[in-house]
Length: 467
Image (tube, rainbow, N blue to C red; front, side, top):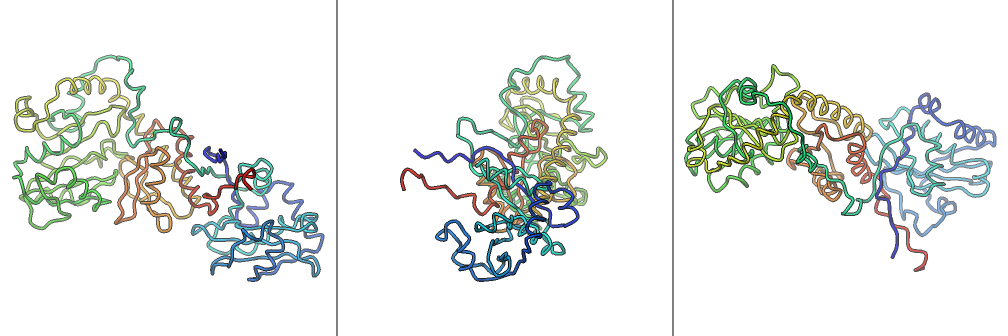
């Protein structure tokens, strides 16, 4: 059996492609190597001749058979003697990758590789690239070598941990430990929620039943077309509604003629059409599942629809619980008309809200801090930035492009135990950001994605015993 490993977060090494910044941050040992090569009279030439690089690469059979158009090969000489070479490959809009590098005995003596790294810095200083990814290794000596040229570390993870020790990172904050939440002083939770919603409301067992009950409460006939306006990720949202409720109604994005309308504040982004839709004759349902806790209380949604739907479990450490705001319905109506009365569950939700509702500001602050931390991490790739205009920190929403599509990221994170939501049409992915996530878990998510960007992440060293 061969050990592969590479299933724990480690640190990769980025070298800034700005001479002033790089020189300031480089370790003294790296600077000494650059000076040593300069004193030896090193010079660098660009080439497309891979046969020269093959003289330096440790295993010519594993060298790339041809340079791609965007790859560049730099060769180092002392006099007429070839002493080193490096191939760099763009991997993101702001990052080059140290793909291949080699030196001969003379090159190692004068530390030609140190100068080749520095040459890349000088060559690309005024380009759109910000970093050279020097590399990462799970071999101690090689990792130490990479870190010598690191001016910006980053977390990276190649393979998912074993199933029995794999983290489970969900979009919602509930976990098993919340089953043992201690009892706390009772508060008038019904009054608190009434003041928060600024309307009468009815407890519901979960968001899907709250949404279904809203449409039934609005007397939307079975088989009707329902127009949907979502602030972001509209195609996947509409598909989700049809998957859940397509046996009763037909949901169509921005339908002109419909029996009712839905304004969805998707992933914490407010639906700007909610107010104008509320002025039309058809009933409006506001889906506030992703916008329970808004960063700005003044912009908190839910005041335009005939009914508004909220999901407590999306925001608080509760395993279930939702609310249908706009009207209070007695148990008989919930049983006979909505078909989702669950008194035991409702009591448990109220007990949980006694504990967690007063702590919602703490949850909000924690999510805001996690959004900022994720933004800092993903900024390192130059291709993942948060979608602006988010009013509620429901998830961390970003866009990605080929070859690292959101579908590929979604599937990879699922294999790492991370739940995400995606919209293929807009190339959007929503990652967890709730306050229970610490820095280690945020880095774990980023590291799993960053591992995809490393061109060598699928490489497995052959078992020497089988050679």
